[in-house]
Image (cartoon, rainbow, N blue to C red; front, top):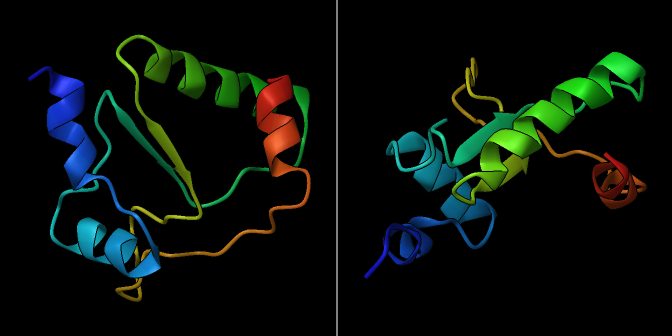
Length: 93
């Protein structure tokens, strides 16, 4: 079993699982996991930062979670984001 197969069962599958994974420490930033509260408005610098994050995940594979606040000051890490145009922006970067 390779490291990707070991990671896969730990990945969250829905909102409740995502919240639970964050709270119990399974979802924490690592070389294979990047958490973003939100993407800043489209700009050259914002897209460059996104490109760096995606490139770091490309080495060994990984997941980018947008809408998860790693600080979670109110105890809830989920910060729903509008999906309109998000896929296209990430694809373009």
